[in-house]
Image (cartoon, rainbow, N blue to C red; front, side, top):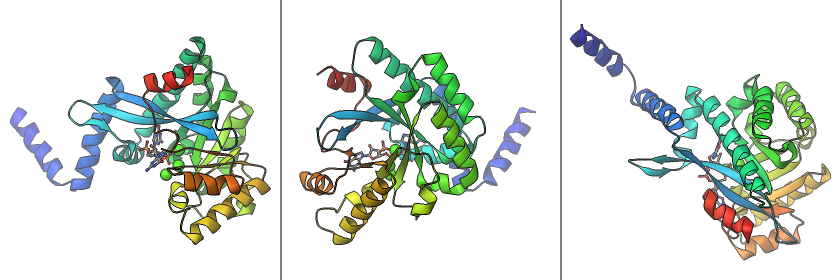
Length: 275
Ligand code: C2E
Ligand code: CA
Ligand code: CA
Ligand code: CA
């Protein structure tokens, strides 16, 4: 029976494409990683352009894998989204950020607002609002110190549903940000229906701000549009003083990037808070 089982498994396996095999293997490893507590969050400061003070931090997930070291999210988030594992992973990220924030707060550290990424798949899940509420209750983390980052493309997918879910999240007291803005062709009319607080200008428009006139025009237009809607605008991926100078001159509210700090492991971020 054993040999037969193995044989039929091989048949099944051979019939799969390499991509499908990779997904199944990753799904198994990722599930074990969550159970074995191998995921960790790093925190990247978000800085007020005018005062230079830290006003928030984005939580970014990493996987500490025995064989591969620290695996970046681009290597496993897409698989997690395809397989549905993102629900468990997203719950873990949310809970961990709130737990950590609460712990820092209890230790007397001035915790800035923590931003957590929410994938398109999570947003489509009817239970998202209940899950967020449960995590807030469980951790005692204050809702107004939590921001959820939703990508522009995720919101465009099911607009009416998205508006309903966002309103419910807002009623809980959360802040909401649109991530990777500028990549999804949103119009002003479209944007204004969403109850959001922050627009995050995608890194690709920030990269060449110092010398590409098109990117300067685009960034300038996003800033004007965001401000017309009374939103706060944050630029991501800021690496140079020249980029920051342009953003400051154009009224950008806040930024995030290697210029101030890369994402830091919890201990390093706590040291920054303590300074
Ligand atoms: P994102 O949400 O756009 O996050 C910003 C990414 O830019 C992060 O990459 C960050 O480390 C990187 N970054 C920040 N400043 C700079 C800079 O100055 N220069 C450069 N070159 N890069 C910079 P990371 O941590 O590898 O995350 C990649 C993507 O993975 C994220 O893009 C997000 O889409 C996804 N992701 C990360 N954590 C989570 C999570 O907990 N849940 C979900 N659903 N997605 C996540
Ligand atoms: Ca993000
Ligand atoms: Ca982003
Ligand atoms: Ca991005």
